[in-house]
Length: 138
Image (cartoon, rainbow, N blue to C red; front, top):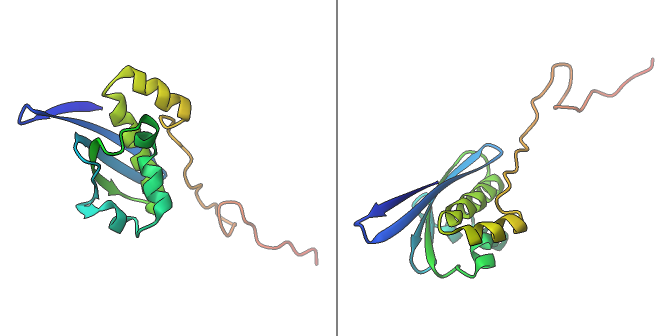
């Protein structure tokens, strides 16, 4: 989490979030609530899925800041669900750069916890990670 000054008037808060194979670099800039992901509007990028949009804005909603910041996000890897969770973690981490009181609220809601689960590798002799061929006694 780092803070950059652009034109020495705007504060930009940058953070990275990860989930499964997805990585999201989030830039939080004071603004009107615009969401842009990979240079596309957030609604278009997440295929107008309201659940994904609601999830990535959840940390802002909890703090009552959904119309106070613009989000500029670079997301890569994984699928839309993993990218959504990566963005949510990145937004939460960027908000922590603003003040410690916000950190306590976000931590209590569980938005600062990294979900470390990822796909288990396939093993030889099995069809998937754990699925075995049907056993035949005779």
